Image (tube, rainbow, N blue to C red; front, side):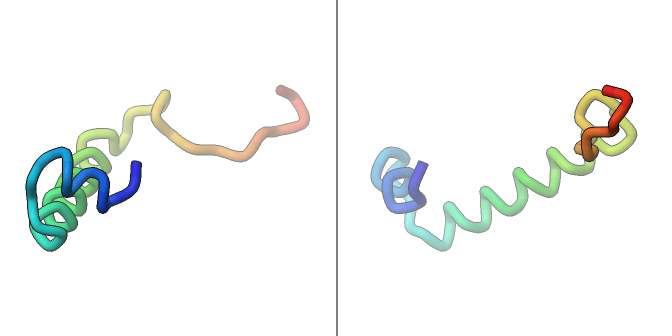
Length: 47
């Protein structure tokens, strides 16, 4: 979804939305560290 659309939907200024999304991405990354199913990996020939 476009950032401008999210600003309109949630009635927030762009700076607030950017800060919130950045913090949410950092929190998600931290929460998923070490969780194997969330790992991104290249396909191998054996798969």
